[in-house]
Length: 63
Image (tube, rainbow, N blue to C red):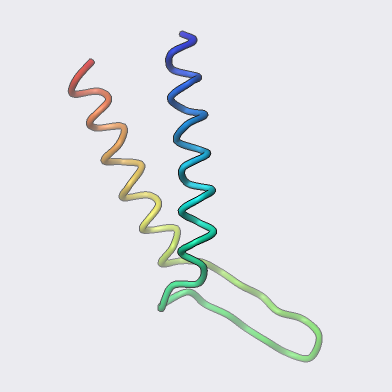
């Protein structure tokens, strides 16, 4: 059980580092009106979902 928590922690750290470098991808929705900005990272969400799916598939495959 502890190994799973370590792997999950490492994955979160990696995504935090990668997320800071990715920034705003083309296709992410940004609305700016006056002093308000709404940012919806749809393409970033899809990219993270694909990467997580691959990681969990590989973990399940080699388990």
